[in-house]
Length: 169
Image (tube, rainbow, N blue to C red):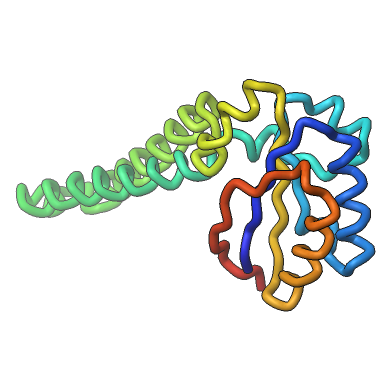
């Protein structure tokens, strides 16, 4: 799949484009609008990005998980090297401690992610600050021509990037 990003300052125009794309067979789940004006996007019945997805929770949680796995591995390696597992308590408290460290790191990463914008959308922040909206469409290869045809009727929409996205099952 390819993802096409367009910049616009007119939600009325984006509403028309979304309807035209849906008529051409592009599903609503493939069309999104990123905007700082969520209420206006909702009033135009556009498919907006949820506030949760505007934040970097998932990516930051993944980083937290990576750090947590590393810290837990170091903890278990130290227990093994110091032969602390040979005591009467065995491995159980150390495994539990490693699981707690992992969980804490994931949780902390998620909290950090709630405070920062999604890394995929950071590059559009200057456009959003100027009152613009980012309209993006995920297209399959066979839908590229339909997208190009619809967009040719809307020259006010400016394409800013085109990047590959993973295919959904």
